Length: 310
Ligand code: FAD
Image (cartoon, rainbow, N blue to C red):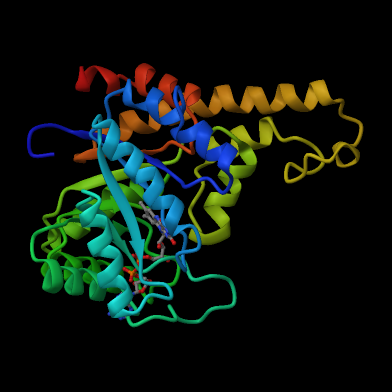
């Protein structure tokens, strides 16, 4: 990031062996993603460590390929200090020394992390105290304010605290509201946050996933342009079910056509969003690849990100 804008992908650990093969097997999605030459690929970590084993399996495969730096996400949820120390040591033993230090999304019904740490700041501090400079540490930033922050000022002050505890760079939560993003970037700089900002972008490929990501956990503002796309290609009466009966009078073909039309429009929308981010003074683009290749590759090539790397 010191030399040029970074570019990276995020994948998640599949739940099944078949999914794992599709992602990390020969000729799988990861192999194809390497051909786009990302600087790093991060892998999510299920809150509570439910799929932690698979997370390490995915990262091992990225490490073994040697084509991109593997970055693990790591959360405080349900983790004690000895458990965290042990898991982080295991990552180091596997040659994985980049992490995104998170509190984690609280599982529904939980009021706390159920572990020794309440906030990501504590995880950053602990990691530095235990492992010195062995890890490069990224932390989350929320341009619209974290959904449960008491105020955006408080949220920014905790981001500064993450930097003071030793974090290296920021990976942002998705944000489609560019006015808000630009405001936030100025605000964190004014607050003394000098860490590079690596912007998280979720490609708008599916209306249901887009609505879900915006509203289920993050409370994101959806700009008019994106809302219009969702309305225009709405799969009546209920985009949240693939059940034939719920499609009402629409035939399968009509339903599929609308989904495909949304994907096309969503790819164009995502490319324009990347343009806006690139002129906003950021240090990296982190694409949530959603374990897909074709659409993601189109976005990388058509947006011109690929040319920066080549
Ligand atoms: P924190 O920085 O700890 O903040 C959590 C809340 O507490 C905020 O509202 C903050 O304002 C407040 N707060 C912080 N410090 C204090 C304090 N000292 N006193 C009072 N309030 C405080 N989740 C997963 O479970 N697995 C993943 O793999 C994952 N990947 C992600 C990848 C990216 C790029 C991003 C941006 C998020 C990811 N998340 C993931 C989601 C993340 O775990 C959630 O957003 C979580 O709810 C907050 O994590 P955080 O690290 O921002 O928490």
